[in-house]
Length: 422
Image (cartoon, rainbow, N blue to C red):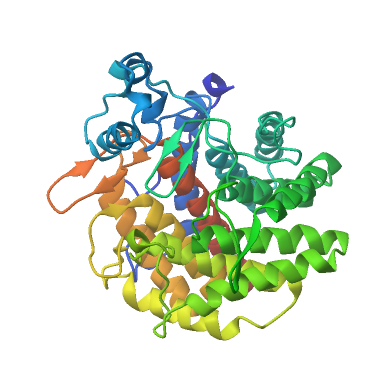
């Protein structure tokens, strides 16, 4: 498939006439220019058959396994962090292969559906369906996990979690369900909605009550409370349970969401989680929380969390954006610039904000990210840019899939605004 696809030439956004905030171009021209970058991104991803490296895939190393490193938890975390932070990609030397990541594939499906809705291209929809069927074929072992669920393609070691290869988690499952629901709405194919509803039941099994709090676990059997995992699980349970008329599950989702809503600080910020080392406040997880709460409210037709969302989006606009359009990683410092943060910023501004000011800020963000993070000679985005150097390792799930989805959403949104303005 990839050898038959040739990307469109990148238009002026990358060559002779880069657009900047305030430039005089039409909505249609801007949508076309951003879509041209998406074409180039998609070509590169297709050429690798949607496989790639991941910041957290170091424990797939055959070398590390042969040295007995997996016997020691500290060694696993250190090995994983070494590869995540290194600007030099040692994975080929360490026996780590490029592979497909279910969350990355889900993001690609969401981006392809956005493109299809903009262009009505049957090719984009057909490709999204093929990737959706791949996701269905990669569900976690049904003998161990009775409902549809998904995890990462690597063993993931962190201070809060130790998640073996093949064990599902809430966030990956939530994003796959989002892709399946989008496919169902676009095609009407029942296999997608059936699996999405089934996965909602898996998320319900993660619901736990501890003392006076109720929330969804990130990982089965783990006790750490992480707000983005809790809120996205609540949103997906609300979405799938409402399709079945399951009132009890909808109430469960509300109870869990209320826990994270109460945890919001007075200024609108959220810590990442509730353990001592989860005290940081970063941009893309804040965006996750806001998008999830908005999705939950839409699924349940409630305005209960309006004030929480309003405080959160106000803090988000104030804390994570420079006047130039640069997106800050943390609330208290600018660097590293990270394309994942940029992508979620675009999604949050368009899906949660939606004001004219949000659209203009999104425009500055996308132009600045293309200026500072896009590698024109390689047709992809860098992982992170620091104050003094950049990490240009090519990560499919963390960087390119997020960029493709967010830029596809932005292009479709600009095209819709152009039609509305006519």
